[in-house]
Every structure is written in C-alpha cells, then in structure tokens.
Image 1 (cartoon, rainbow, N blue to C red):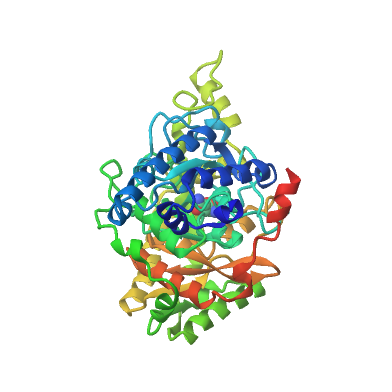
Image 2 (image 1 turned 30 degrees about the vertical axis):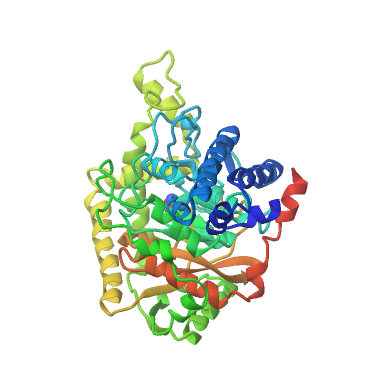
Length: 513
Ligand code: GLN
C-alpha cells in the first residue's frame, strides 16, 4: 500500500481519497517516511513541514469523509488538489517557513507572508510538504550552486539533477512528492524535468503570479509545475494560474478550464491526428549528444505515425538567444539583488565599520561565486558607457527572436517539437570550472523565455540509461493544448519499456541513509 501511495499521481490520490480507499494522512506518511529514509542521499529538501502537514492532512480527511457521507456531488465540488502533497522550490515565500533561495545571504530568513501561489495552493487544499534545494537565486543548470547541499539525480547518484530547480525535480522523480513547483528563467523547469525523467512546464510569461517569489530576472521569470504526468501538470497549473492585483505582470487572460479535463489515453492519442508540428533545425545544436538526438527524433517519428504532420523549419535567431540571455538576465539580476544589503533580510555582517563596510562584508560573504559573476556581468552591461551597446542591443535581438516564433504561429502550427536539453545528466563537477559549458546546457530552452512563450519537457526515452526530454513550445496561452499533446504522446509510448522503469538508483537511496 505505501509503495503505491508513493507512486500515485495527484489525480489517483484524489480518486482514492474520494472512494475512501486511502486517506491524505496515509499518503503524507508514506512520503515523509520515504523522505526521512532517502533524503540524506538524495538531498532534494531544504525544509520539511512534518507535523504541520500531518495535521493539515487530517483536516483534509475530515472534509473528504463529510463529502462522502453527502454523496457524489459533494465530492465533485471539493477542490481538485485537496489533500494532495506539493513541494515548493525554496524561492516561494510561505508564511512561517524559511526561504533561502539557496543562498547564505538569506540564511535565517523566515517568510512573514505567503506568495500568491502559496496562498492559492492552500486555498486549493494542497498540502505543502516543504521547500526544495536550488541553485543560488536560481542561477545555474545543475543545482551545484546551492549554498547548502548537493542534490543527486535518482537515475545516477553521481550525476546532477539539472537546475536550477533540481530539488523540485529530484523530489518528484524519486517519488517523494507527486507535484512540485519550480521557476524557469532560462530553462530551470524544463531542463531538470528532462534530466530526471519527469514532466515540467514553463507557462506563458504572466500566466502565474510572481508576488512573493524571490526575483532573478523579472522580464523572464515564470513559476510552473513539475509532475509525473501531463494531467497532473495541468491540475497544478490550474491551481496556481491567474491574474493577481499584486503582480502587475500577471495577465487577465482567463485560466483555461480545459486544464481540468485533459484528454487521456486513446482519446489523447487520436487527437494528435492532423496536428501540425514545426521541427526547428537550429535546436539540434552542435555538441548535442547523438543518443539525445536519436530519442527526440524517434518521439517525433511516433507523433508522425499517429497522424501528425511534421515540417522542418528554421528559427534563424536561435543562435543569438544564449548570448542575449546572458546580457538581459544578469542585468536584471544585478538590479534585483541590490536589495540584499544585510539590513532588510537574512544574514548581516554590519558591525563596527561604516555602512559601506557592512554592505561589502554582507554581500562579499553572503553571495556565492556564480551570483557574484552575474552581478558583475549585469552591472557592466548596464553601466553608462555600455548600456546601448549591450542591454539595449540585447532587447532588440529579443524582439527578433519573438518574431521568429510569431512566424511559426502565423503559419498555423500547433506546436514546436524539439529537444529540451542537448545532453543527459552529467557527472558532478563536469561543468563547474567552465561557466560557458554550463550556460550551453540551456541552449534549447532559453529562446522560449526570451519570447515569453509556454514550453514543456516530457520524457521520451533513455540514452545510455538516462532520461531524455521532448520539448513542446506553443503560442501564448496554449498551455492546455501543449499538455494535451504531451498526454497524447504519453498514450502513444505507454507500452515502451522505459515508461515502467524506476529511476535506476531509487532503491539505492534508501540503503545509503
Ligand atoms: N541556467 C540558466 C541560468 O543559469 C537558467 C536558470 C533559470 O531558468 N532559473 O541562468
């Protein structure tokens, strides 16, 4: 029973709670036992809510029991995520819990308020299990830049889970939670989803409120869901999406009710017939691993066999996206991170010297090496003599990138199909001494952020025994359409041997604790 509860999707948990087959307390206990036994080895969690979440699970069970007594209509009226456990990346403020964003500069900071998405999840009845590890301030592609600990990939303990949302991705892949929240500024949801073999979505810019989320690069940051099925991603996205008066960048576009009724199985597979997909040749970048390319091309061939039309297209500005990102993102980060001065939040080294000494000591010791690199890059790009040459130019290139995508939607394509990452998970340390090699890990995901579009990664097989992700990119607000395509691909590949395979090192995690 408890092994099954670890494996259950959010949709299956809800069905079991409604029928009375099992309870939210049993589900939470099964997960907490697994976390306690395995997280010493996995390293996905920075903070756990233990007893509090058990109490909330008991309250959810009382609500289910009352609804069961009243009948089917009462059960249907309960919120879709009632009693379903969720993990939050440690940049989401939740009242009374520590929020570190993976940085020593926020050590000891306890959130005095809820981020809008934390409040929405609570209102939806979700049970927040705790906070997950991440690269410091979401800067990185491997979670190795966390100031706190290493998160391993449950497919191979010697390899990274991707990043920056590596803790949220590993927690879901290792069956520590059915759902988790990540953030994606340049790929930090889709890339770790790809490397850990789960589904993760970056919604359209403005789809999800960022009020109460620690900011990295404000014109790019989006919050989004991780899960082990497209249907679960849709349920979690529905719960967190929507306009928010506290975030002026959140959109008033109505949240798509289709997210709650994603087609499944044969229905989802047959809906692929006649769909038109664009396959951009620039996404098969130099240096892409042949095994990754083969798995992605096989998935595209499967979509074609199911009746979809695939056209090779060109998105010529793709090659400029990475360079443009590394102007825009550090520039915005340098401004956003100015607030960590040792006076308002977390760690402070203000002592006997003057104010400037206090700033220098706090920021010099509180920020790690990658964050300092970004602040220097960003401050340089924004400085008076260089603003036009770098930041302004980057914004112009960004417009060209968006136009490339616009041409695809104007031509009537339903989605772009592409790899999510040029490689499978790599060994710890392999890219730590070469920042540019680390930056290249996001070559396939960054263009989407530059254009504000939705994108997801869904598992499409293994290369050398490690997961590969198929990326789907869509027009603004097409999240439900993209997830329906992912559900169709899940149905097509339901009998593939890799679908049933547990992460290779999952069993070993328990033994190592
Ligand atoms: N890896 C990219 C970076 O380091 C993207 C990170 C993200 O999406 N948060 O900036």
